Amino acid sequence: MKWIILAFIAVPTTELALLMYSGRTLGLFPTIAIILITGIGGAYLAKRQGTKAWHELRSRMATMETPGNALIDSVCIFFGGILLVMPGFITDIVGLLLLFKGPRNIIRPFIQKWIYNKMKNGRIMMM
Image 1 (cartoon, rainbow, N blue to C red):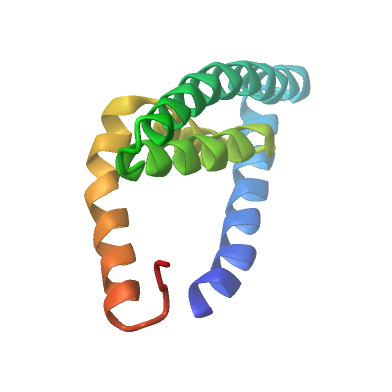
Image 2: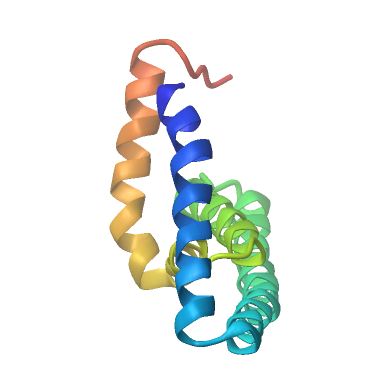
């Protein structure tokens, strides 16, 4: 819980500082153009990657396979898309990393370990 509160304070403050610095360095219109391009491009990439992940998830469920990695990929793509639509440079970088398969392969073991620990402690129950 303390991490969420920190994220709601630290991330917007840092984003605002970077946007102000970018506005002073690059100018107002280039900064706005970068924000718009990353937002539109990110929405397009998120839709494309999300559709692919959704089809993989549905095919695994249809063949009665565990959705494991496909489910984690879908959630990562969803959060990546949300981060790309939000204005800011840090959220754009993290969002792009979540959209591509390489960085997701690096992040996936940490997510799996986190889920395993939550299940072990009884905070997540599978039925």
